[in-house]
Length: 175
Image (tube, rainbow, N blue to C red; front, side, top):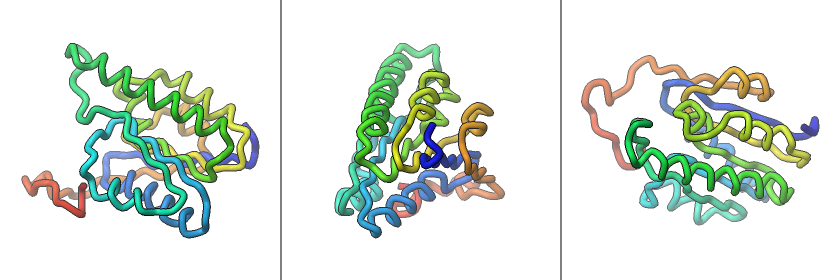
């Protein structure tokens, strides 16, 4: 990996991993930089962030995920795995293209942790980056190998969450 390629991880069980990464996209867009965002698990095209990001100059976002992942014993699990693999191909193309200053791989850590994505394959793609860019991975369960590859890792820790008190996800806050 080129020394000029940054790797940042937002992980943990707390709220704010994707939000932190999208804040970086907002910042980069404001500086006129190109941004690629690939959502590996999320598949809801009606989220507020997707609507807003479509209006930001220089930001390309794609959802390859199919939403909530079923147990690995479910027949639908394989569909989710294929969708995540499609996302990894897009990530590899974005990294190899050199077009993007910031590449956000949203829920990549979670995809690996859930067994949807081969950790070595994913990390080999990131480690081979020769671009002058920053790669951000988000999601619960960042592995030690991911943490070792990154130069900056932030763990979001849940202290209290409204969902624990049966407060439903709120438009503009959680989606």
